[in-house]
Amino acid sequence: GVDRPYWFGDQRWLRGLLGFLVGINLGLVYVNVLFNEWYGRFYNALQELDYPTFKTEILVFGGLATIYISVQILRIYMNQMLTIKWRTWLVGKFLHRYLSEQVYYRLQLGEAKADNPDQRLSDDVSQLTAITLTLSLGLLSAIVTFVTFAGLLWVQSGPLSFSLGETEITIPGYMLWAALLYALLGTWITHKIGRPLIGLNFQQERVEADFRYALIRVRDHSEGIALYRGEPQEGHTLTDLFSRVVTNYKAIMRRTILLTMTTSVYGQAAILFPFIVAAP
Image (cartoon, rainbow, N blue to C red; front, side, top):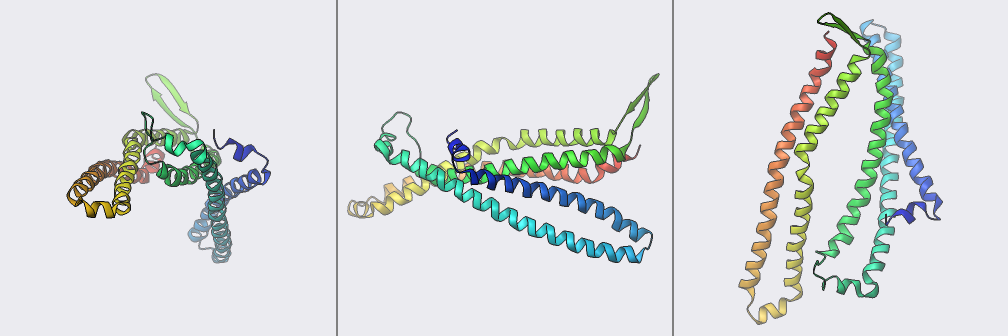
């Protein structure tokens, strides 16, 4: 891709910075594992009325919380620093291409005109860098978290045996498989309902940019518009452009409500799901 030279060029410190950020995310996963173990010791102490252990675990929690908060702050800072450095490099590269050989002019002459190239250089590059890093590191953390806790769940759940006709069936680590099926089902439903938001949000950025450009055009040509009394025509144009903003935004509202309702039901069901699965 266009950003390949940035990550695989001569700037080795960038790969080191990315590796350090990956390490921070893996460290957070490990801290979450320590928190999970702490919960077990803490609630056992409460159940057994073990006051010395209770006091010790309170201090342990303070240490874990301090480490977690510190690592989170460091992660956010490193993520933002890497994002702005990547964005600076991309903007410089695209600006060089945009201003060389009169590309900025020739883009307006072709049949497929590029809409709002200024927005592409400003908003789209910003979203590309920020969202790419967030999703990539989030996916890595999710995979590591899954592998870590899947082993714990496999050991703790044990086998499930039942009869199907005259056949005796045993499912080892059945709670892990149930959790996987529940997660896959929820992911599929969320994807089917939320996917139209991709196109709607893209269209929203386009119509917002068109409306913003029209407002800037009125400001830049204010003398001519005032001289020729062009306010009614400009007002009609601006009203039409803003109506497109409103229409698309209402479509986003409807789809977001549907998605929120689905995820809320799924999230609330997830509270009872482990107890239902553990009941056998």
